[in-house]
Amino acid sequence: MLNSIKRDWLSNIRGDMLAGTVVALALIPEAIAFSIIAGVDPKVGLYASFCIAVIISFVGGRPGMISAATGAMALLMVTLVKEHGLEYLLAASLLTGVLQIFAGYLKLGDLMRFVSKSVVTGFVNALAILIFMAQLPELTNVTWHVYAMTVAGLGIIYLFPYIPKIGSWLPSPLVCIVTITAVAMYFGIDVRTVADMGELPDTLPIFLWPDVPLTLETLWIILPYSAALAAVGLLESMMTATIVDELTDTSSDKNRECKGQGVANIGSSLLGGMAGCAMIGQSIINVKSGGRGRLSTFIAGLFLLIMVVFLDDLIGQIPMAALVAVMIMVSIGTFSWDSIVNLKKHPISTNIVMLATVTVVVATHNLALGVFVGVLLASMFFANKIGRYMVVKNDQQEPGQRTYHVKGQVFFASSDAFANSFDFREAVTRVTIDLTHAHFWDITSVSALDKVVIKFRREGSEVDLIGLNEASATIVDRFGVHDKPEEVEKLLSGH
Image 1 (spheres, rainbow, N blue to C red):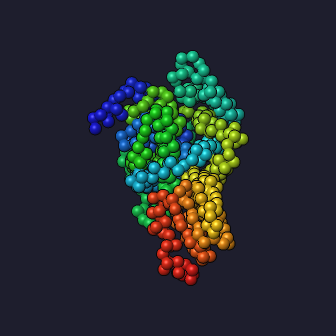
Image 2: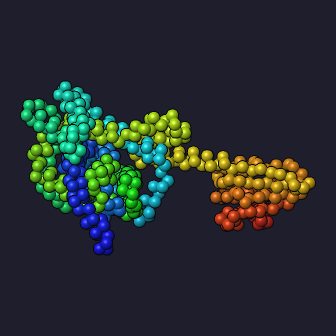
Image 3: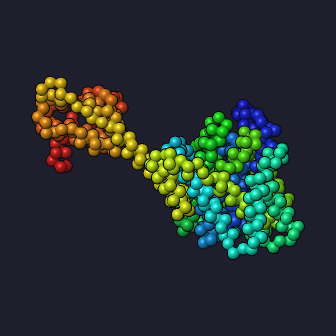
């Protein structure tokens, strides 16, 4: 226990505190922007970011990873907030946390190994597109000042890091926010500000049970949203954890992270915040700023709250154009531009999976549905590819005897090809099927083997199966019927 505390909390105090401070500064504009995307007051996202970051620092499974309010989650909340209001959002966030805790106990975090690289790329690209699309209302029917501020903000974000010394340690999104806000206040430019979007918090969050009827009707309203939020939150968190694992050359407990995300979202909802998850961009900022332990995540959440509570009047003066610039930067940075170049290099099946994931997500605004479609397509392409590696060759060593050599994987996708590879019309007295280099995976493949053996026997041939490995023999003995006369009789009689 003590060794764990020293490793996760005290092994990198200076680096974690500095990194956490940088992340907190960068979290403010994003938390406000994500709140606006969801259609709620900025304080909902700010409270959520504080609560989730602080709680996940204690209960999460990936030290050094940043979790807070995110665009992916905010996009799923829009319809719920419009139709039912904030209280139902808080209730949905609470249920989201419960579902994620169950997912952790069911060890669903282990399922991430089934998500292919092409699905992850499609997921990231779709997220980037949706974040960009969410900024378009702020750029429609506005004065030229908004466009000028947005372009200037993007210029600051991308050019400031090239300034010697100061450009390397001060976050350029923060510089953008401060500069654009100062210009707007100095010249008195009349543009929409954060204060126009809703009231900012000026007090610490308090315990708040969602004011909704505790009925089945309420459950049916929030359950679809909670299920989608839980799935998207865990997907993004698991992918972020994998990225941080690679950056730090360490491992993490994905199932503990599932439970931790659930606890954090429950805590957020009970303190007036919306559901959130891990943030890919902020986690990378944290790691590259020197953050490695849980202390960096804790400092990020704590410092965020301190700034918001005591500097709320100043934050309310931030022009929306500055936030739009930040979010456009996030979408550009999130999008995998290499995936466009790789369309010519990668196999067509990989491209189809990636593009299908993007298309479904953008069309439905449901990241979970897009990932499901991507995983399904990737699985089908994989099964088809592996199924083609199964071959059956034959030779005749003595008159009236035929030996078939089976090589490869026999399963549902290759079982028909396996069954059609034998010549049942040939007049032979003995057939030997050599399965030394084959593997049977499921009942479909066992059924195909039964079909082959029974057909040969019906033609008057004796059939010998040799070389069956232990795993295949187990499933064949359990589900096969070719050596069970009573079962064969039922099969042949149509029962």
